[in-house]
Amino acid sequence: MSMFCHQCQETVKNVGCSKRGVCGKSEETANHQDLLIFVLKGLSLNYEKAGELGVAREGAGRFIAEALFVTITNVSFDTEKVNDWVLRALKIRDELRKKIEAKGGTVDLSQDCVAWSGSESEYLAKAADVGILSTENEDVRSLRALLLFGLKGIAAYGDHAAVLGYEDETIYDFMAEALASMVKELTQDEMVALVLKAGELGVTTMALLDKANTETYGNPEITEVSTGVKKNPGILISGHDLKDMKQLLEQTKGTGVDVYTHGEMLPSHYYPAFKKYDNLAGNYGGAWFDQKEEFESFGGPVLMTTNCLVPPRDSYKDRLYTTGVVAFPEITHIDEKPDGTKDFSAIIEQAKSCTPPTEIENGKIVGGFAHAQVFALADKVVDAVKSGAIKKFIVMAGCDGRHKSRQYFTDVAKQLPKDTIILTAGCAKYRYNKLDLGDIGGIPRVLDAGQCNDSYSLALIALKLKEVFELEDINDLPLEFDIAWYEQKAVIVLLALLYLGFKGIRLGPTLPAFLSPNVAQVLIDNFDIKGITDPSSDIADMMK
Ligand code: SF4
Ligand code: SF3
Image (cartoon, rainbow, N blue to C red; front, side):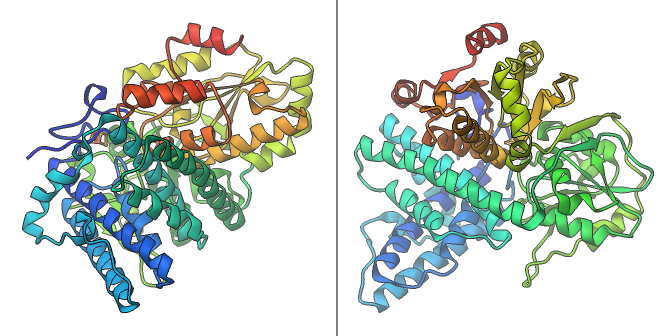
């Protein structure tokens, strides 16, 4: 058996993981995930057909989103659970077929992904035939990969919106259209068009999630978050799911247990609905890849709501919990109840018997600069640009990761001239959000909009500046991009930015392994995408 996965930035030699994932994903899990994608293509063909015939498809679109989310880097390491997703996908695919046939229609049985129904013992053998490398032409494979990985980002953000009750059928329809396209003979122009459409749907999805988050929890506000610890025992919550956060805060209220955020959960401090909880104690640690040390020293239970989970050490396995689509063998998983709520009482009880967290730092992080907060400061910002106090905005959003080469982003942040403002979102911020980079007339030099999906806020801020300065072209703004990527949510953020017309985006630490030379050239020719070089040269170029 072997595997092939090249969907994240840490893939082996920037080519592909072929024995085991650098992320810790096993061959079995990787192959089951490939099989899941294969079955989702068949499901999507039936979904399209059902749509043409007016056959009800309730639940199928949401299912596609959740199943794609399962395959994102650092979400599921549990082969059995992925196997269950394959079984459910086959069932939904075949139920759609029955409904289509009941209406007198037919499904395309010439497509293996529609017709195939092996027993579970055949899954691994089948997976070997249907993974990424089954597409022989390297440019077609590259365009399909770019589309698939962008879709995964749409799926994750769409799912976050859906858990809050915000859904948009056009997002599901596009996911199905795009998955189905991957088994059709399309021209390269048609494939490029679908990649660009993914960018458009990325904007739609991030806008929907922004609406879901802000209508449910209020607009993020400037907030100072402590990085120290208090005297009570605590629960650490990581990942991106704000609904889990809300339920955990509600259930811990008055129990004597504090809640600390980790990684991408830091921005929850910025929302009015969460700030009112006295037991929301602070942020513990940094980006996802340091979690082994941080979860160990935290000493209390840890709840992982989405990516990025790292295979845990034995020392804290008994106090690690997963929920949602996250899964790891032998780690307790908290399921959602039929009424949509989750019961975190077991975690809270365990926390009570734990010692308070060990302090690993004691400072503060300032954030909360999503669109509404920045618009409220618009006059100040515009005056600072007009007076020359702010020369450039540098968007440094995205992901953090393990590689030493990511020191580049810290060095850029430190070396940027003092008349620049860094706009950030996502866990990339941990490379510089604890540095004292000062302010410009009271405006902090690092403006953190929130989670990676809040890159949408950064785009809105740019569009607002374009309007205020009455510019024809968004690329005439004093704005540069120096984006860090790791997993597939960053792929959709990138495609969304391209769709919005931004050009000249720098991407690092490496360009994606899944871009063939020709596809990379298309992005360079049409969007002036570039890789990072070294901090001084890139800063000199950005400050031109
Ligand atoms: Fe390798 Fe990344 Fe795939 Fe994990 S997600 S197997 S590290 S390419
Ligand atoms: Fe980070 Fe995983 Fe991408 Fe949401 S938590 S940005 S890497």
